Image (cartoon, rainbow, N blue to C red; front, side):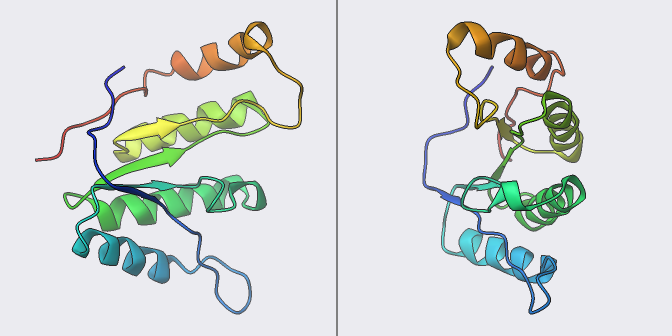
Length: 137
């Protein structure tokens, strides 16, 4: 697996409107501000983005908004971890197909884990062939 380029990266918060619906416009504008400020990349749908409070469709929408706004301007990584391995695989495949420069994946949370118990959860995510980064042009 190739590593993302070194540089300054920020965790992307998930903006909501007054009705607690995703504010995709605000997300795109924030990514543009970060790119204008010279950041090298962002991570969408991480713990700062409160991924555990979002459903799968919302996580996909946030990833797509970040990828759209960051295209050609900064690297975009997408956190795809979930307590469900199947959901993590779906999110990883989506992130790869949508053009993410990298994915990050937390191990299943709220479960006691060690290296031996994490391995079965990690293998399916690695097999989706989306563990890569792209260099920016």
